[in-house]
Image 1 (cartoon, rainbow, N blue to C red):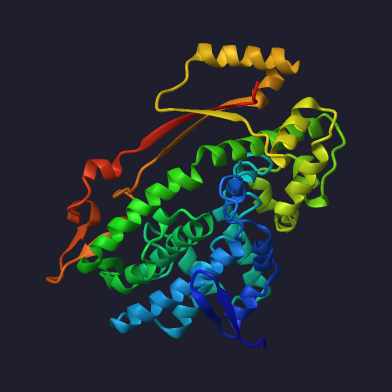
Image 2 (image 1 turned 180 degrees about the vertical axis):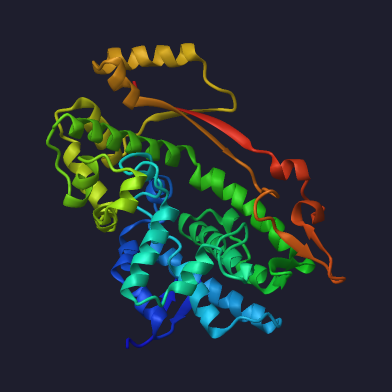
Length: 406
């Protein structure tokens, strides 16, 4: 049996990892792989300090889960030791299915399969290796356990995942507007009718949380440079896959080759163990090694895109609150064809329009309830005297025209 560990985290300080099953999970190769996957993908192109990993995020979420359990128990909420261990494991493994650069692979070489599905597949694979000792953690993760509030701690609009990534991403990017009071929010959590609630005196912390989340999305996660970097990477991998289908020999790692040279679908992940086994061999290093090699490839499109990412020669970005006209898109296509000597099909890789929209809060999702002293509850959108309900629900939509600099 492995002994426990104390890990020094720059955001939360010392994190205690108990010996036993949790330590076994944390030491598993599928979890250690997260050391090699950055939490914010290509956001380091905007914020150079954003070098933290999904492993660090998982550890932080685990720490917050430990704090939440302790706080809820102190308020008389019954959580057994077995349930506490299981929900901690569920949050440790919630991101284990992420591929390199977040959602890029879902849009290119492994289309149709979401990282949450892969996380569940990996949890079940680990569970078989561990003789079923992750059964309860999986039930909580899937929201199939009788105490529904435990699932909310893992996945909801106020889960430990969000409380960590907002605080952690704010810390590493230096975007101080995202620095939320996670400790106070956790202290204000309670359970009513098997549902997570927030004590009324914590309402201002929730308002700050929602505001910080909105600011972090538009300043970090959906920053125009982050958007264009991700789109360039998607176009690069899509072009590489097109060349692979034509029989072009590309320099790639064995794991990346499997996905480039085969059309892998969501059904394949469920039907063929090789898909999952190969997927967990992928990390950021596979992509960067390929990009460096492709930067000198004879194919003009592939080399332009790859070299642009390696040497930070990124697409130009125009942002608008209104859709771009067809005429403007057509003119841009013609200019790219003329400037770079490519046909219209190839020019499609060198420009694109990305449409993004985000709201601050959705009461139709797993809403945030405020608990008053008389025992009644109210949705945060109605309880807040700071936010207007219509503004909370309003989706902000932006259009990004991204194209190779002419």
